[in-house]
View 1 (cartoon, rainbow, N blue to C red):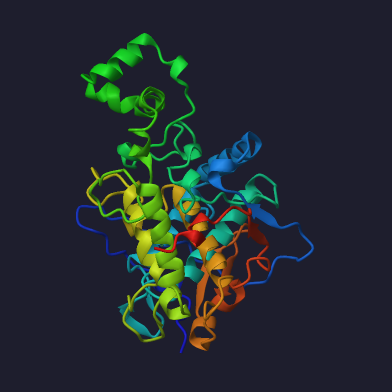
View 2: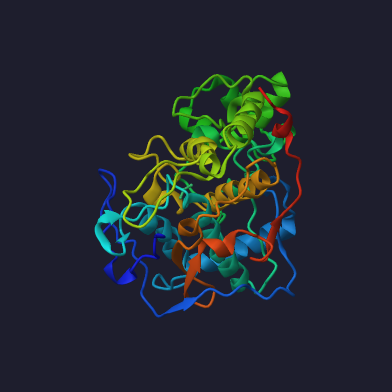
Length: 386
Ligand code: C2O
């Protein structure tokens, strides 16, 4: 039988990693309605690559997120409530309906892709409704293409609602500050590197200066490592090794639905039967790469309970979601499961009207029916067969 949506009335305290102060991540409870597709006569939302967005778009996105963060804390559309959805579904706050001893866990199984697709679907619609823009679409972090292999700069502006201080300071992107804009003082501090705090504080600026200076040597410093395992490896060659990893995980290691989407997880099963290729790598490593290693659990992005408190989470997952769509175009046996236990599995999410909606996996398989597509970008790793 399929995994049922959780019973919110029995939501309990999550199992948090050591040292985290107890938090309640259960959502409010209300009457459940069944999912209906959005009207098909509406324009599609086109999710843009985060490194390619226009200033106009960015202004809207910031506005929407700012409004979301300012909603009353108990409003299920509030940003923290949205972040807590991840905590509740991933840290054992829910148990399987009918199996009170079994945690409900949406990672490490075939629920991974559909759960996160639904999660983003509602999150995106809430943002759009807050700015009255039914075409608003979440940006995706295009870390599978060279120009996207950095923390997208839209997320790195301090004081922006897109910013999160709990990230690895060594993995900040260069900002668009030119060499000429550096004061002599800034440049001298950089050269001498005697003042560490200053150095850290201005690191974004410095990288640009360095690029200008040496034209290469430090530019790789901020490139995302799709195989990141907590040590900072030699940066050289990261782009090409990232492309090879993409080919390996999506094409070579993703030849069947089970290999790509993950192992079966049915009612009564223990959690974590095993995730698909891309859930393991690069999904996991990008979380770890983004989080702050100086926090006890690599918060925010590096651990389930806090990952979605970083707005970049939703762009990371947009890219994961996009890769699911790309994978289905690659042929062979690369298509969705037809197993009814997968198709009939369900979740609950709050929508933009604060309704608690019951959704099923079978209704999320076509993003156009959900009203969105992805900006068409090159897929360079398709040619990176090792
Ligand atoms: Cu629910 Cu990227 O993890």
